[in-house]
Image (cartoon, rainbow, N blue to C red; front, side):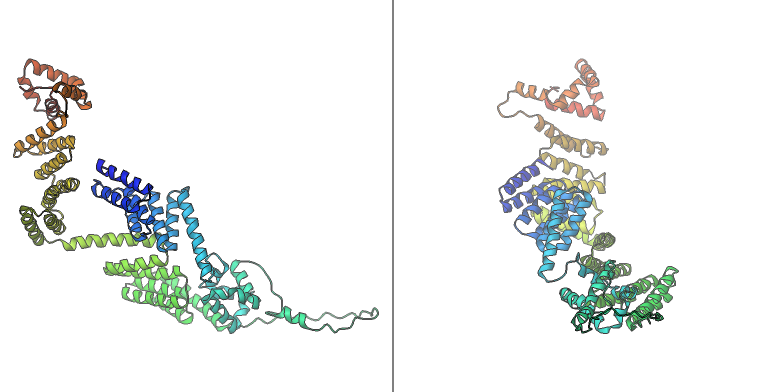
Length: 577
């Protein structure tokens, strides 16, 4: 950061410490504006100030900018998580704290924040009368619930009872019914035990059997005397007849068989056959997974519009049946991928974002970032127009001549957008920035112009003038040395040398109240001057110059020697008269 930016940052920190958050925001904003390069700490500090004022929208924007500048800095993630928590996005805050802990597993602030968010999630679930994700109610939300029950001998018979199946679906829709239904129907506990992998047994009578047995009167008389035992032949044991499977269970099994066949064809890239099997699976049993598989096969076949349509159907059906949000997120993500392949980047971004809203995964996040970058580049390329760029340049020149510097900046900015490879746009805008005393911006534009055209001499000279205005005299001289080497025809020789002399003179000029000798003594202690004087090569050159002043001109042909001699002349160590 520049000295000025450091000053504003220190002011912001002081305001923040005294809880003057609005003033802190103003100071950090000034620091950001004058900082020569984007600084993640400044955005982090301003994010914290916004959060202290409960302005979580702006706090989130600054936290995200902080992460963009430095994606390895943990505090940026904790700032973002704090803002998301403040907005009420508990799931987003939880994910962000977990990202912070991946960067630094020992970070106490991230761990404390994560604990607070998880507690808030539990409290919110309790307040809604729902079972939190970590409770047993979560297992009843399993989209493969009935298939699992059908495959377990302890629960398969339950599915013959359509009333019981309806009861399970009611609990899925309204988790708060779970506790009361567990009391009234012990089969619910058996279902949960199977889903949890526990081994428990119910009584033989089914639901309510124990209560019926205890209610029967015990009217069998006790014998008065021992009776002679009669030996009975053991009755032959017969195998119990299996309960018939319900139609739903049968259909599920058939659907899974079709899905397996579809998977085999999919892997062999027989997509038409795979599509046919997945469609049959869906017709047999309404499991959204089959639709997702169908959409994947349509995508690979090249039927992108069909894949999008199937995914929309999967999302609609999934909402109605309360399907796991991770499965719905897959549908949204595949729509995003299909639109990307179709070239509709705007819709691709929209559906990737909707997928992340359902469930954040690194894969979809990486795809989103890639599409955003691609769209930004295409938007830039689509805006390029040389004719419009020239019109904007002429408009900027007119504003410049009329001393309307803000509109000149605006016109030159339009020129840069229309012709980003034309160095003149950056150089002209640098000149307008300099008139507005925005010297750091002028330097950055000069650097951009030089990057586009390393032989654009005017950009170097404008950069040197901006450094002079900022009192960065060493940088003035360094920039002038660069342009001197490129000015082969000496077109700008006089201008360069005048500015160099001006910069060197300003560096070593007398301070208020100093005598000439005091100035000379101070300058003689300058580290760079001391280094030059102690250089054995320079000592030899200076010795020759004392005996033969004309020899100095010969040595001045060497750029490095010339630079050092000019410094000594400017400092008054060498006198030319």
